[in-house]
Amino acid sequence: LSGSKVQAYQSGTIVSNTTTDNNGDYALNIGSGSYNILVSSIGYISKLIPGTTVSIGQTTGLNVSLSTGDVNLVGYWTFDESTGTIAYDYSGNGNIGVSTSGATRVLSGRNGGAYLFNPDGVNQQRIIINDSPNLHVTSLTLECWINIERYSIQPISWISEIIRKESSFVLQFDENGNIRPHVRINNDWKLWT
Image 1 (cartoon, rainbow, N blue to C red):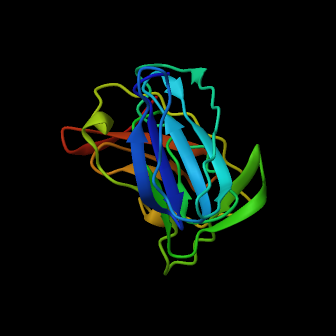
Image 2 (cartoon, rainbow, N blue to C red):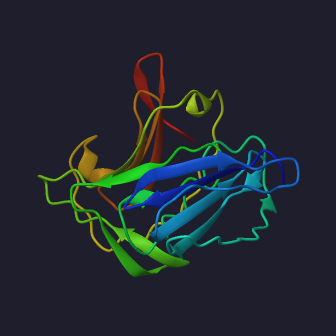
């Protein structure tokens, strides 16, 4: 697929990136080591090839096929990477997330790995996704799978929040453990029904 982005990550940092040519070929200039390679293109579901090992002087070929996606998809995070602090965006838009304050990886998620958040009232464990123009949307469909083992409630606080986009929307659970989406309209939070 020509024009696809190919990025090599090491320890959660992009160390090399390029774009595929008209034949779908690419070359990354990277040293020896282990890398996570992310191949992405708008309108396709990105593919992560974790733990790609390269030796000095080695030429490695990766044949990657991307599944057709939705060109309107602005973010797609599986949160199933087994190591590191990076939550890769599989939408092709590059909206990479970073876990903070002790959110830990577990290997027993719904599909592969998952994040485990243990709100303790002090650490704001969450995934931070930097602002991007393609995240400024006028309509929204939000889908997620969440396993809530326990929860604490404080009115409109980060402890009860699951997902938030500042000044736009928040997905949280109430005192009865029900998932409650809220949207901000004219500077007022409204329950999204």
